[in-house]
Length: 319
Ligand code: NAD
Ligand code: SER
Image (cartoon, rainbow, N blue to C red; front, top):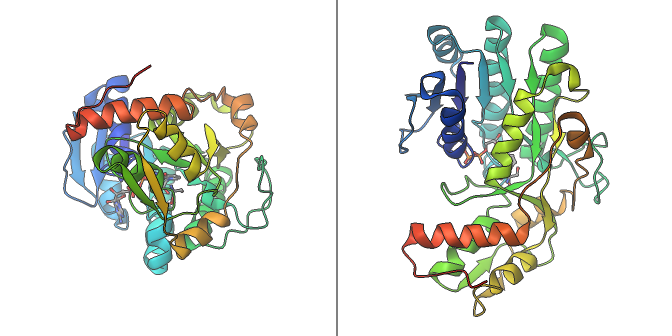
């Protein structure tokens, strides 16, 4: 397997690369991003703008790439500020990747999102197949991306697969401008300042997932034999359905003096209100054995543990 990753310096890519190089060997992984490399990847890295079709094609042909993890995108909050840029990167970038994949016989992994759903989608236990009428530009690009990936599969035979990721929590690279970024910031601020100003209301229920589960899901889906898949773009996956108040209470178990103030950002709140409270991910479990490992408490312990080391803060979990 020869793998190209786009958007490799982002929140997900910066951790996916390490798992891919461990699993498939460094010489089989090629990391790219529009930005200059700031990571110690154990594989080749080249700057690549996914809006440049020729550059993608050159990397694919010169390196015999057969699999593309396409992560380059604009996330929900930034997309709402810059909707035209979001359409360009999320749709033109994806179309370029799919065109190269069709021409050079590559498999393609593309994340979708809980953002692909909208206010008239069933809110609780949102089914795999249901109404998708998102109202944010991010959501419009995500549902269009799902359809485009399915189209390239049925029309051109490209092996396209995707996940509707919930908010991802991680401790290596900060998130890139999404509505769920609070769920990462809250851990940093709890350790650094003992206080956090949250931009969503305390009872805003959304699906979330810890990064090791997000990486595991992508790799397991891509390794599943094609004949096991009924769905492709994209599978609901989740680990927990939680609100800011739940994060605050979970952190307080280990940092009892931690406080949270709620100063709502109306643009982000409106986006969050249009997304499901909880996803039904039984299709992923049935078709490729998806199962999350982390819940809120095990994630909180691991986040506080790892972040305290990263930030040089004296902190030990008391069991
Ligand atoms: P991120 O914003 O952290 O990283 C995206 C990367 O893409 C950045 O490093 C950026 O430099 C790069 N990029 C932007 N424009 C580019 C271009 N024109 N050419 C090449 N690179 C470009 O995003 P992420 O969180 O790593 O998300 C990866 C994918 O997962 C996206 O499709 C996102 O929508 C999806 N997703 C993420 C989450 C989450 O919570 N992180 C949740 C659901 C879905
Ligand atoms: N975490 C992502 C965002 O908020 C969900 O797709 O944009």
